[in-house]
Image 1: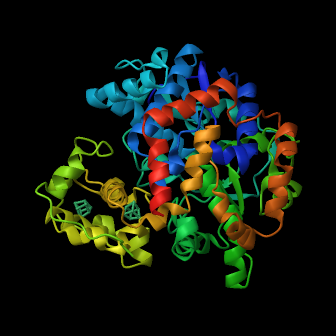
Image 2: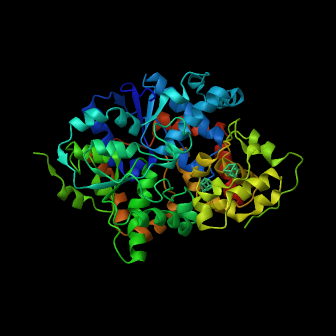
Image 3: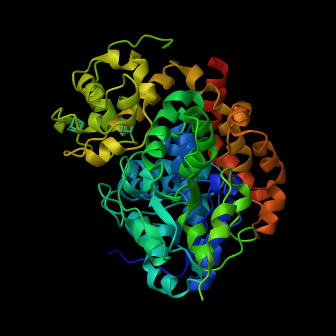
Length: 311
Length: 195
Ligand code: SF4
Ligand code: SF4
């Protein structure tokens, strides 16, 4: 497995975590603090532009130039192990570094943009950072700490059945760099196993998209929900919790599940949690002050009531 | 749905796609063997008339009709096709480049019009947002808890120990200047005008 860092981590803020599931960030911080992972959040970091990029709005150069600025912040603060909370940030940043390192024309154009913006000091030189060795997803850090996590579990999840949804932009854009297979993704399942839950390792549509489809959710709602429906129906009765690693997927399932349940005429009854939220809960974190369950549409309280302290 | 017809150009679509910055130099478009693995796993093909294998075929044939096919706007950009393609082709990337080409020549701008606000918000605050054009649609689907959540968010974030995420002062100015220098601000103005 590739080398996963435990220090000098820049925990990269995500726009959808910020406003939809902030508990994903606070749970991650809780875990990093308890697992001895050294990190910082940079107040000046801008978003990756990913949503805009896939709304067909952001062009590649604008995305690259903003990435170069964020890479400067990482270098300047000596936290060059950029670790994302979102699968789209992960792939956008990987692509940005790949282009900046390998495409000289792109690099000089980006440096011209920075100069014109009065930011010459932020210019990027080839191989200052590496796409393979400087961009990570929080799930990778947690995975590399899985033994430590399993030793710190305080809550009994053994009666809870958990299935996983591996975000497309983590598994499918750079499959050779991800630490799980895009054809048989098991990363979240293995991590969940360390938290003491019952894992549903396979179900129909396991590899399928959440259906958000970036602009599709808004511009093509029915098409978008058709894909979401495939997965939720396939999981009916099979699991109590669906685990996530991307706020966009989590939003699609958690917010639209009641819409699909209404149409179906019965409850599908899945609860949606990010893997960091599940691990934090299992390690005894407060549901409201750390895990942030109060921003979820599907109430998490039922689950909290079921999990008791391990004797 | 397309507002403009596309003239024949002497450059082939394949060449144009390979030269686009979004495409990696090793994009296996010419190696496509029309196996259909992309289509068999594609959520948009499952639920609409869109067919990535066919789209790639049209591009390979330099058939510009592909630009007028409204179905290409159904792609989810999920990259399932790319992860299954045996020859490192990516219908997902090709689709992104085709849509960019259409938008840059003034076609189908109404499709992105409602997302323009995302761009303006980013220019000002350096963060992604859900465009307010869609907020009411979301409230209709998610119910009244959703606006309440938005209202309570600052308190919730404080309770979780999280700080402000919108950029301010110098950082915000830097982002704004970058987007001016990259031509993004101009692009937004242009799209807004056409829309
Ligand atoms: S999977 Fe690849 S090779 Fe097969 S039809 Fe699709 S693009 Fe062509
Ligand atoms: S990226 Fe587009 S073409 Fe590829 S599988 Fe997803 S929806 Fe289909």
